[in-house]
Image 1 (spheres, rainbow, N blue to C red):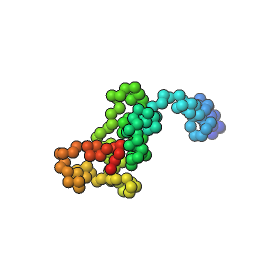
Image 2: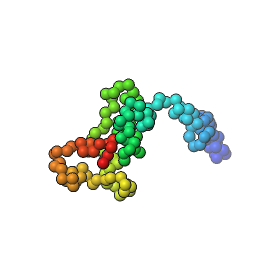
Image 3: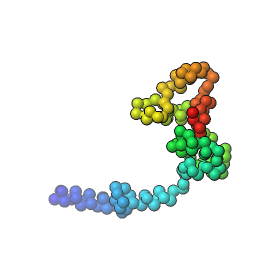
Image 4: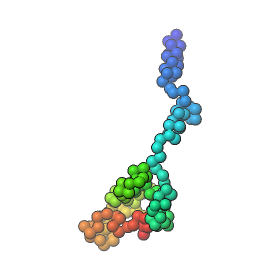
Length: 143
């Protein structure tokens, strides 16, 4: 009798708490698909940038960074749309080191450095003379 009551309570709770569209396309709420499609477009991808930034786009396409979308360094398109002052590149070393700090699992074809200070010493540059990676490396046409 107790087991039957638990099953009934569980069934009623499930009926009221789980949305009707749950499980329609898999283990999530089916209505979520349409909700996500109706959200405003925020990210456009690098192809969207080429009409206004043809020179930078051409440099980027022929560079080692061609697999990195513009929005990774410049922020998403929506904050920039029509306002040229809102999308400056992130020019701190932490951004570059997200991909270029030496890690064991990184592919060998991705240039890696142990630390910014050590990299400057290897290049025989005084640490105070250069403060950011982009002072020496053009991210649109690296190396």
